[in-house]
Amino acid sequence: MSVTVRDIAKAAKVSVGTVSRALKNQPGMAERTRRRIRDIAVSLGYDFERLQSEPIRRIAFLLHRQHKLSATAFFSEVLHGVEDACSSLGVSLSFLAVGPADPVMAQLSRHEADALICAGYFEPELLQLLRQSGKPMVLVDQWSLDFTSVNPDNETGAYLVTRHLLDTGRQRIAFLAHSLAHFSIRQRERGFRRALFEAGILADPGLDVVAPPGADVETGVAFLTQHLLALPKPPDAIFAYNDAAALLTMRHCQEAGFSVPDDIAIAGFDDIAMAALSNPPLTTVHVDKPQLGRRGVELLMQAAASRSEETLPVELVVRDSTRPTSSPSRPTPHA
Image (cartoon, rainbow, N blue to C red; front, side, top):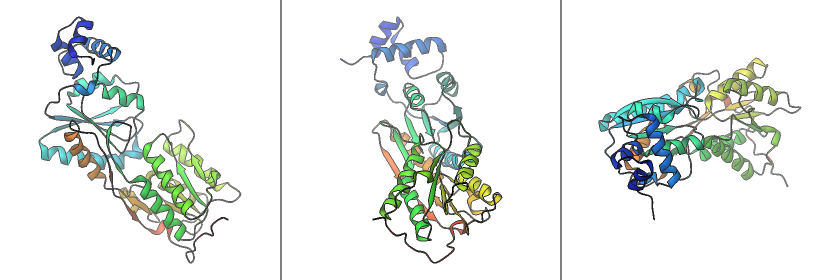
């Protein structure tokens, strides 16, 4: 038999109304009491999805604290899309940066949000904690089992970039990643490897590099770029997991005396504004970032009815950072 609100009230020795307010994270309650009731609900095995849905009047846009300046260009455009959608629906919007060590439930209570949009990476434990708020949730630019989500087509975009680099005659293509804990980066690596496989090229483990654990973006990119350029046979192209990393990679290559794209081609992902302004302009994958935000709000309004996973199309944008330096040639497949 499923656990009911009355069961929780009996175990906590409080009223049913108090339990309801605690589970819905409504104001007017001491945080200690709220936490005790929620802990009892979890221990009894209460299904938080059973909370009665109410009209969504305020949405909280959550971003992990780890997404610092390097991610601002991407997520600010996603947030603009969320703002547009909320404005058209007459829904209030607030912003909240969170981390696993934060008093998340207390923060949510202060924001009085009815629903959550979680953009980018969140630890699984943090996602489960947020789910226990009982509020409708949608993940944007992130995926986790049993959550509603919307993502760009990361795998296809990475596949297109890698095929393009192969078509320009590059054969030693490196993939530069910050952390494979991120869903989007894992999918991009998958597309990269699929393109190499279809071309008959055995992936060189020395060219598939991941930043050291705990390194920030700038430190990690600097370390990986120096490592790749110091190889006995450096890559002739580097595909970085996003544009911010690609632009840093380009700078380090140029400072080391490598010409882009004559000595080494550079490509990124996301098509942030700076990608078109770099020297040379950066080849990348265009992601409709505002549309990610808008679609996230639309799915949030439907979240109570059903879960879904949506993938939005992307487009390869070719610029001078991957300009062919000779006649394009298809790499010879390995026997």
